Image 1 (cartoon, helix red, strand yellow):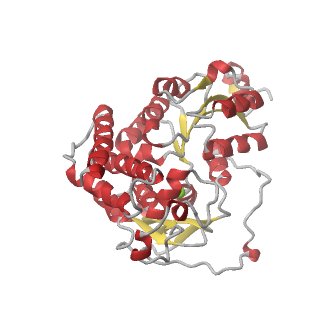
Image 2: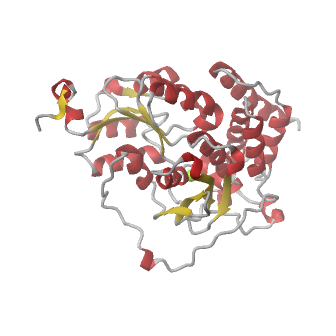
Image 3: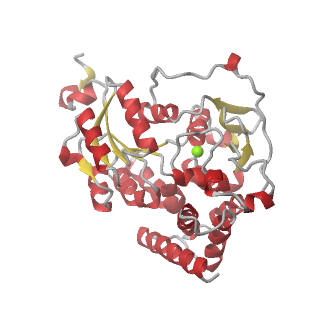
Amino acid sequence: MPGAHGSLGRWLPLSTRLGIKRIVILGATGSIGTQTLDVVRRLPERLRVVGLSAFRSETLLREQAAEFGVLSSSLAWGDEADLVSLATMPEADIVVVSVAGAVGIRATLAALEAGKDVALATKEVLVAAGELITAAAKCSGAKILPIDSEHSAIFQCLLGQKPEHVAKLWLTASGGPFRAWSAERMAQATLADALHHPTWPTMGRKITVDSATLMNKALEMIEARWLFDVPIERVGVVVHPQSVVHSLVELIDGSVLAQLGLPDMRGPIECALLYPDRADLGIPKFDILAQKTPLAFEAPDEARFPALALARRAAEVGGTLPAVMNAANEAAVGFFLDEKIAFPAIVDLTARVMDAHTVQPSPTLEQIMLADGWARGAALRLRISP
Ligand code: MG
């Protein structure tokens, strides 16, 4: 294809000239990582994997490397320094960040500073360090492409819209397994109850518990605030139990745009990796004529789900408070998964850690990491002696 990229074409790497995107996946063996590899498997002429990291599953990572032809020198084991070198490797065009929690902050920042687009599944990165992360992207011109179904929906609805025409972003929430439970019944909820998500069956354990407390939606409010540069009061939450409408954008003239699809993360992953292009993955598609149950929308019950108010407070106060909310919640979910605390104590403990925190305005990365560590320690202390 001579001349496809003008006279510069012959100086570009062969893969770029052929339109292949070379991707690094941080967190390759988790739910999003394995689904990302399935997208690559379905689009071999468009995507190539050049680096992989995992935290625990060494055997699976070795199998993935063998299948996708990744050099053993381009594998990493979750150590922060190794994640940073993978995230900045010269061969990569786009970095998928799908590690568990705040451990992904430094690597995301490094990728963006190196001018690499980031397909971001780890929402905790934007919650804890949204100001630094978005500033780094603005500075280098790299893009942050969401791999979160709600934010992918909003991203798609916003294409072609002027920022001044956007009135409000509406995140849909399935409501989780306890949507219709009383507060009394929720107080008795077991780990198995919380891990039973009604519409998204293949998520990791931490995010499934976050969906049950609605802390996942709380984190997504702050994620949306940074991704789309809107104040938190213009980010709304609507409960939509069918998980067919993935989110909505309300414009100033009252028009509301929505994105619909099956609950399958391979859609948002494809959208992020191929942007601005698209491709047919050959997976089941949403059939509007086969939709049997009516689509319902209702306001969330903020008394039973106090996590939403915590997110609003964290975003309004800003500084280190969102990082503290995120870290305290990560710790509290860990306690719940170890069956050390009851279900309502997850958000209660998070709120008490936030109350005990002295907020640092405009924090550096080091201050954010310190606040994160402080919050985990405080969560443990407050759990043991409330
Ligand atoms: Mg989501």
